[in-house]
Amino acid sequence: MVVQISEGDQKAAEALFSAEGFEELTPAPAFDYRTYELNQEEAEKKLALLIDGMTKVADKTGRFVYQLPDGRIIDTCTYHRWEWPQAIGMNGLFDYYHLKSSTDLNSSSAAQTLALIKDWYHQRVQDGVPTKNINSMAVMYSVACLVDLDRQRGRGSVLDDEWRERFEGWIDEWAEWIMNELPRTAHGGFQHLTFRVANEGQLWDDTLMMTVIPLTKIGLLLNRPHYIEEAKYQFLLHTQYLMNEVTGFWYHAWRFHDQTGVSGSHNCDAPWARGNCWITLAIPMFIELTGLPPNDPLHRILVSTLRRQVDALVPLQDPGSGLWHTLLDDSTSYVETSGSSGFVGGILMAIRLGLLESEKYHSLALSGLKACLAQVTPEGQVGNVSKGTPAGKERDFYKRIPRMGMVYGNSLLIVALVQWMRLNKQGEQ
Image 1: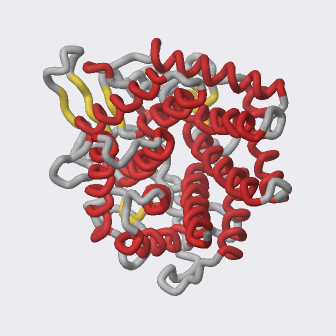
Image 2 (image 1 turned 90 degrees about the vertical axis):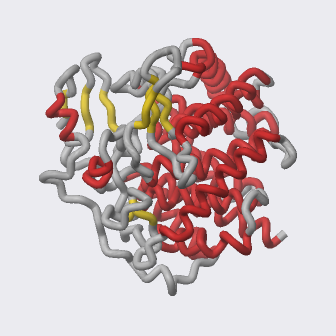
């Protein structure tokens, strides 16, 4: 079954974001996160389960697989498409491969993970490379990481010549499209163009993770400093318009009313968890990639921004579940696992990089990680994950988004678990 989405078909579009008549995936926690013991052996078992589960996420109803007027089939639910949810999965898989192969080049876990990554790209090439937008650009981060590692370890060590040539062509083509053809908002912001909507004049918090981080990686890999300068500007511009200066949380979207940039407005006053988690992840990733020194003004601004957000998260962790609510400041909204996983992964990364103090934030991240793992079913699916979410115009919109098995529920938890492993490994050295 494929849902046909035509231009102006409001009813069909609204059905994509409604839980009505849909059996949501909201299992009881598998264990009490407060007494759960996490060690390396247990982490490896959970990671294997999550990876296997990620490849099997399915929309059995077909309700969330849909066809656009130009014939494109869009599926942001399962593993077998090229969009941002799957891109985050590739990020997590690459991080795990890099971690295991750095310790042991002959690691069977590393070899299996690399084979899985390559098979995913092989299938996407067979399907056909999708049209370019903010979210499909997210795939280029793991592509650039693979090329970079192949260069570091020696040509052919990670990619054969055919794939390396293909990947090098992709990162050059897609980054140039971002720099020269992607529509811009007032003041030169990256307009959050998606597969379905142009979102004219809009800045979204997702953009930093989906496009600016890949652009940064590619700029470093291809030695194009103007990419890095552009990425710095986008971080500053998005922070200026999307961070709530009172709470430290981020709005989902901002819209300039016209190209003068004189006026604009937020979509609504909704501190949405998953939107916020992209910031928790993107800031330490950007600092690690660029190697910004601590006395650099941008480094200082970004760390201050991150700290404000994380400090605001501390009192809002739900004590019963250990997760955060999908609207961070609304305890009547459901707890949500993907955003919580992103918070955990970002905090653990920031601790590893020395951006946040371990003694102050580690227990928060660890309890959150255990709580997220408690949401994993025996089949490797992740419960209480909200479906893909556009910028809502009212707070209740976010509370009504259905919860279902989504590939990024697994992806973000894989990212968080690998960050825990990396931090533990660093502590053992």
